[in-house]
Length: 103
Image (cartoon, rainbow, N blue to C red; front, side, top):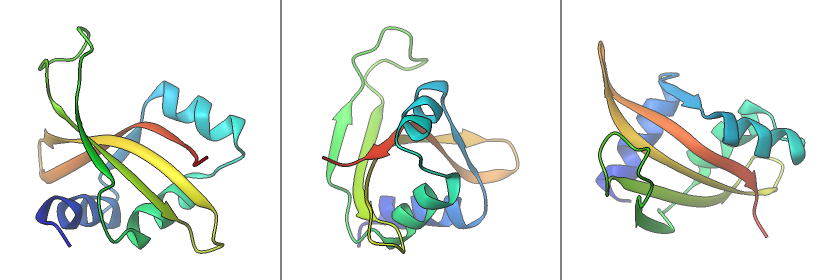
């Protein structure tokens, strides 16, 4: 398991994560709860893909986005995309940009 995935899982276990508006819309459309998404991340064995952000609205252009596809405890395959960001008082903070059922 990669160091990055371990850091993401530790952030989620500590409750140091948040959802973007887009992620919340994705979750609502697929009837996913925050717990479904957290279970999926904690069940992951690998990061599926690492992307470089191309959005001009990002604070740091080209920041790394991590794609994780894994099942929750009910076996539902969930796709998440997020980034690790520094946060005051927390070693890492995982911000989810997208969270939805995987195709």
